[in-house]
Length: 433
Image: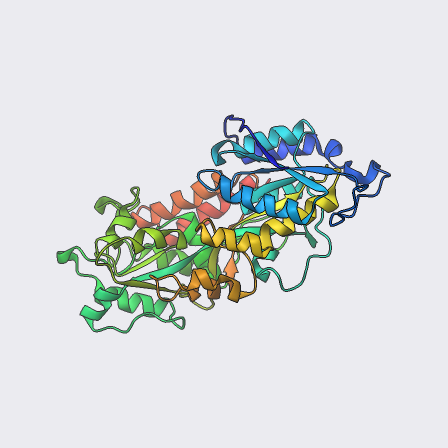
């Protein structure tokens, strides 16, 4: 029978420290089942002579209200696999990666662990994750599966995801006599509509897209540019594509989008602006569906976010991985697959509005897609056809702060876009040394 252990709380540490700690203990974590001469019992066997195996699962995704939902999934797994017991540890996200780093360094990491994309890359690079073998074809959305592949190896499985779409206020478009955005729109269409919809005297703005690292790397991809060179040794975002992307963001400030002086960038400013019917278009994540759906009198919908020369939707996936130190990798992988793709897991997650499962079969998401508003929830799935993941390095937070800072200089007129990007590129490249 599975059981959940008591969370351990500790301080959040930097990704750079994580990389050093993982490198130090790499040798201890790569032993795993290679030293175990006993073959694992058939996970599906119900023979009384079969060896009973206990695997441990450490996670953050269930914390904050979905512990019982996770328990239900685990119980169903154990019923289908009576020779496997699962011990669950749920930790708050704020403590999770410090505790995980400590567990790896001490040789006590669980068999299966949660990893978001940013941290997955660091752990994968340090060789402490076991390859996922014989991944069933057609089960996971390919872009989500690819997010947990590293240097040609599948080192994790997607568990849940969120992404960014374009929200729009139908009432404001109707009042202006404009057609609603479609999946065929480009930046030019957004720019034209935003100009027509902005009414500064009435406090109505045409568009809102933060001038930040997270919006820049996405806009760069939408223009066909690359943040780094092919081998990741140099930042390359200050070229023509980057200038076009940064200009697209910066030129909105004070024209079709509020400035920092107006309140832009403060907590929930954009959320409240859209909810109050004062914002025509909004580049934001599907996590805002619930809040907007509960706002009385607001008529809104979403589409796949427009691109420039190509589509590129921001993707934020969480996954699970089997640790290289696991003594039961086959059973651990069996559980990881069940947790991320079984009908029980999909139905439980959707019924509890816990998360959006990463499955390829859209019919399994009907319960989610039929909920309104928004009417066009299919845009969430359509966005997976062309995605961009955040650039990740060991000094990721420093990189993000540099890009946001330099874009801020451009938005405030302290630097030209070209100079701001050149300075940012030089500073980010210096972090790679």
